Image 1 (tube, rainbow, N blue to C red):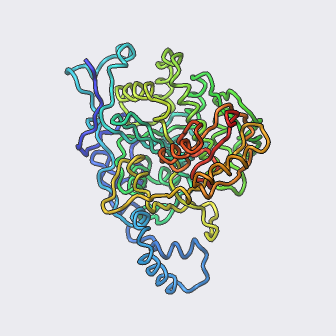
Image 2 (image 1 turned 90 degrees about the vertical axis):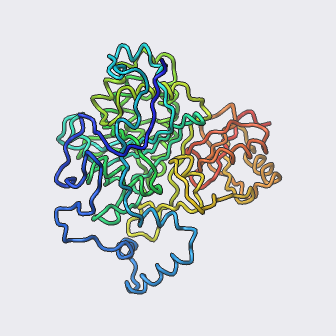
Image 3 (image 1 turned 45 degrees about the vertical axis):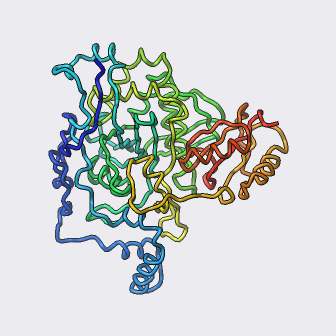
Length: 486
């Protein structure tokens, strides 16, 4: 009998037995109903400053506060297209982010849910996902003095945040990377970076603020991964093949954490994969690191799809149980593994939550969300629709297309730019050459919409389209020209 995993409309939450009890700062987070109260702090009489007041302070403006208020209101009324971004800061918290274990239950005979692991492995193909599912994945920073896998080890800030949407309707998996410096509104805390949400309220608060930021997107499950968990997972996979675009060196004597990676293709072990994912250049914000995290995720996805990994599934599950904190059931994991193993490469797509780093901000690393016109992105990557809002349509002349020479042939960049401009891509421009020589031209869709890449592919008459945010950060499309260009 085929067992199916389905999401229903029941809004109760039954947390896993490994979930830690709420701390004093989480007393209003009810683990049975997941109702969130605004009185979450120890001092309910003290309220956080208003959002405009915090903006005034963070931006370091010298103008009078009353004038800033007036300008804020005027700009808000004029730029009606920013309504979605405004919702991310002002709408009430969604009262039903957490879903119960029954929402993703297996259908079949009574008693089949209690199968032993051996039975699960031999019948993994029977577990199927039949409705879309959103999973919030958080990579947690090391917490000094804690034991790996203990509840305390998951109480730190989230170094990585991904919203993964699995959709059996179009057989796709889409990953939305959320930069750790994304500015959000946390109840009673005001504006803060999203990485603080887990430290202040655990997975419940993290789910809620991400859900609200994405227009009340449903979040069915969460996974928190410790740095030890990432190392163990990669080692169990036998390492992952990753191209390191530059030499990476860093040393922190206080935490004894160091990074030492050389440039080029490497089979990274667990420790090296952690270094690759955590390395951060000076004065470049978090986006280059998000790009590397996506490259690592793509490499892990390729390794997981290998037939040789099937024999290691029991060990992988043991690693997850020890170093992962999640409310996924074992049967749900089976359905996700089965879904992922049958996923076509073109249906694995990634992008970054749209936004900017403001040079005017008092904190140059703060990342400010801009969801203007991102109706299609929210629908594809979060499963939410916005009534009355139209998707942003980018005409070909307005698309920013970056050209990177990966063919090791001189003069190729200029030829591709001329060809694209003749086809109507007026904003094609030269970017830094890519040091990894490629046979096939790669068309990287930065903003998550595969159709744009297919238009470029049609214009060039060659190239493989890949939806990921691993190209030139300023572009809509990045073309890495391979040796197949004539």
